[in-house]
Length: 336
Image (cartoon, rainbow, N blue to C red):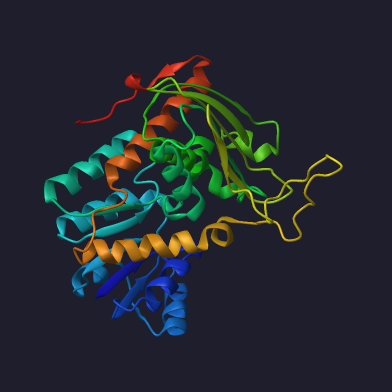
């Protein structure tokens, strides 16, 4: 299989390295807005560096992996669809609903494959939680608590391009709420704080957020996020039912200390970032994409799944700005 990869930044380099090791990937072509960066990666992997995006679509690839800047995603997805090529794209499809719906319309009109990079669907902990909920082990699920906490904020220049804390970070938790529980969010009430560094206020973003979400079966969920968790990178989900309670993300690297005399000791080596914490999940989602391209499995996360998570993020942003509960029915969904 011959795969073209667009974007050789941090996640692009990780994905290229993963694909280069895959037994079904015979050749890899990489390109980047910075040709020197693409060439350096190609030299290191023994891959081919293309001078630009055009060559990805004219050199005869079997599939495309998009890890370029977010602003380029929708256009590249559309171009891949018009070329009849299956595509894996890091989230999001676009930073707004209009761009997302337009890109999805192109994919659906072409009848091609679009797999989105929601890597937590391939994490062992979240997978086990999903199985526990679906098996009935927890009984009636009544409470879910989800959190995403970055150890340190991104560069100031990234914030205006990120889409904001709900769309950039909590969108993963929103996807997990749906994927783990099997239920839809019907209403949200969200708040946010920009009391941290001035760069958040300058970007009209927030550094900390909290949301209460109601699912269609009455289950209540909370989702919190922060860019400023100095203890480490902390990603967790707790699910409580009337029979049992479980937690995702609790291990000897969880960056939290107990104040109880007999509590567990602080982590010797707390998680510091997403590639370290979710490395195996990132590898598994690309292995799944190769199987999808080969016709060996169904798409595990198509564009409509990404749209559902984005709509929840949009509802949270509207709720924060207008300081009111927002029904998901208020957020456009395109065709059903």
